[in-house]
Length: 69
Image (tube, rainbow, N blue to C red; front, side, top):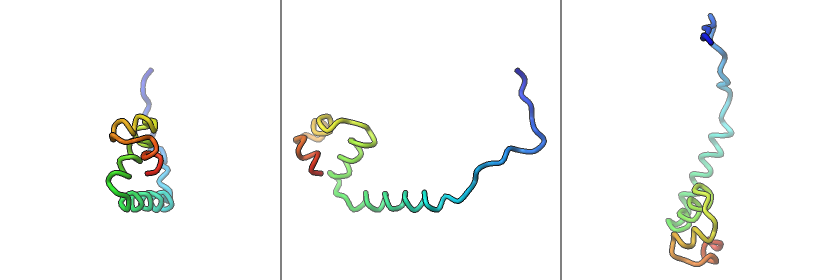
């Protein structure tokens, strides 16, 4: 199948991203207020998608500590 070039480029959805940017900045600010240990729990639990038990094992603490943080 051959590619076909159009005379005019397709429009991009370059709309207003103000709300998304504000949310992102708020999340970053909130993460900066956490202690290093609390940030580690958040990163491992939500960004790395580990279970509470796995986070506890990685950090060498109890599951209760992970839940608390």
